[in-house]
Length: 84
Image (cartoon, rainbow, N blue to C red; front, top):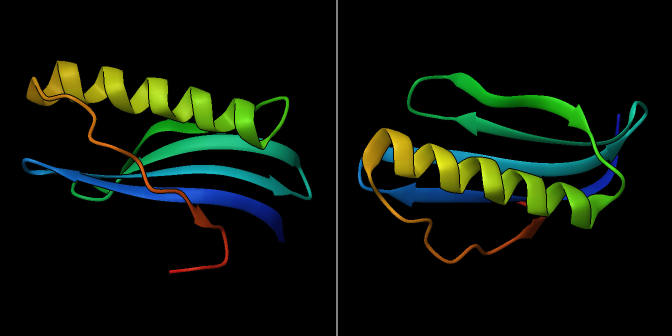
């Protein structure tokens, strides 16, 4: 069960990524999901806190976009984990 956290959706070019930094029953975890391919770019991994998770997923997303699409990461607008 999700206790709290944040998420963001990145749409640039043909890419659509979802970034997560969440606190759940397993602890604080961070992950990046590719909506277009329905694959995890960075599966859930433990982090120190929500802010640390945000930094990690931004790094993963930035590297992925550079490598896969030769694009830069646009500004990120974080949302509460329970919002849509």
